[in-house]
Length: 576
Image 1 (cartoon, rainbow, N blue to C red):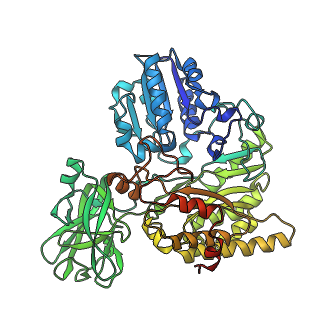
Image 2 (image 1 turned 180 degrees about the horizontal axis):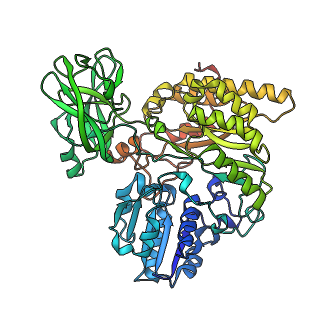
Image 3 (image 1 turned 90 degrees about the vertical axis):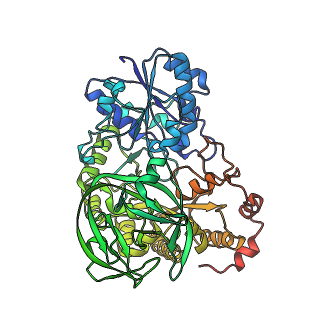
């Protein structure tokens, strides 16, 4: 395996000036590719590089990958189809060659990846501590395996950005190895990652020997996992009554975790991680570690109380997602919370503030001068203590107060408004990416967003106010990179009007419109795919508006709405 080549994935010719519509991703380089190549090269395992983004068609790519023993690819969901084609072509050109893949799609949809015959080895999850052994001896690894992450992001080597593909046309070629601007800030742009969260790294879970109640009866979760069952019809507590809901993504979320044994007064029991929330008879949730003997619990059947809580040893643990009520029944029928979109954030791993600033200063001095910064964190506005330190140190220790793009959620802005305002005003946070998605409470609940129209309205009003004040001082208005979703399953026309009314209340936003897309790996997406309602080709993971995504949605209505044909109805809509 002496001849190895990484293949950078993306739109044909995207780094040759052919950006096309909705081509933000054409501007960005792949941090996973560069980090892993940096690790490999430090260990003397050299790799060459090709890119689908540097060629107009597969013939050009094929000429670059012929004669190699190993092909490596970092696969995002929206590049899954490209990766399949690349692997197939590589095998045709190099019949004895080995294809090694990893990336986000391997983590959120390992089944899809494993079904590809041309993928020989698939690393699920972070793989910084697996990549060297994998490349040295791929035969020592099964087809699908869990990658070994670094203990800390601080253990990562400083990424060599010259290991990215070099663009061949403006505007990217003039800023390499930094990146071009897509309108969020002046070039050159330094993209950086300050935190990492695996979508399935839930912060609480239950032991796999837990008895789970379904509409058809009850059995141990381990039995469902052995059968490969991922969806169950479950009774859930819906604020005063029982509802039957579909639970999706039944999955292992941890190996050999410490758990507590919760004994109940009917003689049943269950084991859970100490921080797993359990529903009290009062309607409040309390972590398992804080349960007390005699405490009354909400139950499917008879009144139940806690008998005792003891050390439960260690166990593999699981979770299942049950929107919109986010609970299910175990053991004697008591209800426990399930993991959801927001819950994993508390388990976020984050680099130190000093480390982030030091890297930006190094990039400015080595490849700069920098024009602006983009944080590729899934959620920048999280961990208040980190943000407070950032607000204090970035203006003082950075070589310049570069404007930056970073992501937040409306509910956390509503929770920490003073901190948000400090960051916008004092640290040059000029483009705030928020997935508002919808102005409709019903649609937000369908999406299990855990944000409300009031959260969205508060956040919009706050940034509008800050922007008005800054522009009066002769400064640049901070703007939303506003993620808006249309065609949500079950959305009414009134809900769509509310979303448009919400969007129009923003001052000078940068809109990014998408049709709801049923991706494998997402809760609602899995359900729609299972019901046969997805209109998307299996390998298509694009989300932008334009092509129908699911059956039963009136896409002509949304086209007319976006064309302004419902202006009167939108104006008359009450929101929030």
